[in-house]
Image 1 (cartoon, rainbow, N blue to C red):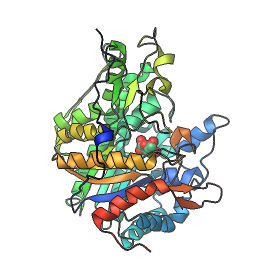
Image 2 (cartoon, rainbow, N blue to C red):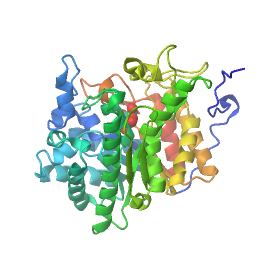
Image 3 (tube, protein in one colour):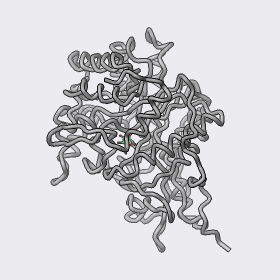
Image 4 (cartoon, rainbow, N blue to C red):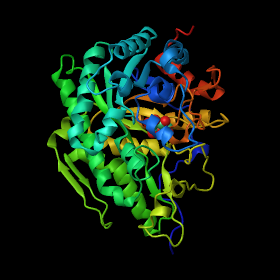
Length: 459
Ligand code: BGC
């Protein structure tokens, strides 16, 4: 008889003591944020998401979001009040290089001050160079569709590294290359809004170029003074897609395609030096690429982990049925008893453990560069932290080399296509008054961070 039972890893949470957690003394507990999501297009008018915002009538504008650009000093204090000892922030390329080849010293000075304030507050900065957004001039040049454009990103990273490297030990080159390619080139929900399975070859090219950009940035940094001690990695989304029904070959096939695009093709590249982007038997020309230096191009790997996604295909759909297959609604199934978040996924902390196991194949230290609960009602945030921190601690106990954890996010902020509907913040933000308020559900994470790093200088 066909099995209807899930085979994905499931723990018996009723009988688990989530207080049973340990972390190494040197473990980093932090918060993560991206400057664009926290400052919006009014602060960053040269950012390509401005084109996206205006392309369709009725789209909510990002405005100034939480106006982190002007309020960072206070927000860094809010992070310090939680008791964390590290802060991951993406800086905005389009404000540093608003026009091709013209670098803004003011913007660089601004970020220098941001990093200095983090350090003054007892937090080690981790800087992300690229977090989904591009300057408009870079988009006009064809963005990551062209390998010849990689040099522009590398040049910007070199400028930034030279400015900030005495303050910043951890560098994240690119945030979630697989998601950038998937959301912009298959789902069509993000810039440049290309949509459909027929774009798959281009997706492979974009992904390959992003991964090559990471390697080129890594090499550039290593060649610069201070580069030998800098810790350089990238943040990888390791969302596992899995068939809702074990017996359904179509669901399995779709899940395996998406895993390939989202994270597996990239992981394999860093493990083997071979990039093979292939979605056979779809009639799409594979992208093959070899670069043996990929294997040496990571000081750490970042995992961004939220949940897994169960693929449930409507009866009668085929894999080439674009309207049905490229709608995110197909990817929101849940099992009985699952606890939903406000995004189309559930609490699934076992998946963080699995992600760590899988990424360990790269053979480098791991950082959890993002994890957090979208929860406007604030009635699942605490449980989320209990379960995910338990899963993380279990992985460490089982011998996996995880060095740090960053909660996404410090504040409610702009959630890409969902705009301001998703509430990821440890602090709630009133976007009209810009007022911040600590959520009750944040206290558990703060207490774990304080207990485990003994950080006591709360003001
Ligand atoms: C991204 C963030 C995003 C978060 C929550 C991650 O994929 O890096 O920018 O806000 O997920 O959806």
